[in-house]
Image (tube, rainbow, N blue to C red; front, side, top):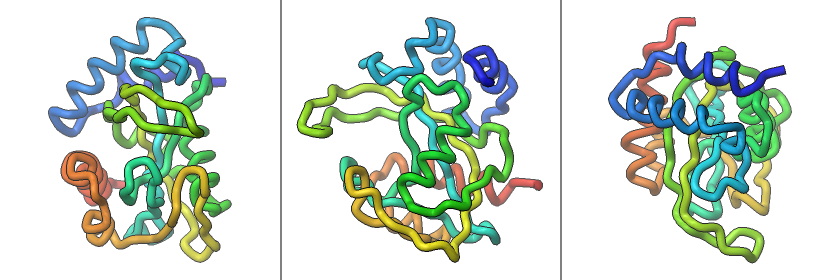
Length: 192
């Protein structure tokens, strides 16, 4: 069973690819050293989340969901909610948010890290204050022949996009330019 020491070790071994990941790694490790409350969304200032960059079998398409809060196509993912095995969180969220059942890690290593700002918003009739997501991203593979479906309380559409088309579909400039482009570049440099 994974614990915060395992995540700390994985983060310490993670090799950043750019300035954003270097800075975010430092802050992530600092927050992690302040106790396991960071794994719970009840920590209103910042908490850990996990995302999946879900690609098809030939790794030329990515599965995205149209997120109801952000009004944009986005990767899959969610809160750790106390879970220390973030790969498991990323796989579970990919399945829940898209309806596909066949989701497996391309690698069990952390693919990317980012600290994401979340603007204040309404969720289930209650206001959620602006906060940070300390996010770990995993590269996952899904079966593009399986039927997909949206998860009505989180997204309104789900679809497969070519790697170039996914960037055109994203409405959030920072996510598009800083995060998703980075993930695509990492895929292009991946040696498996």
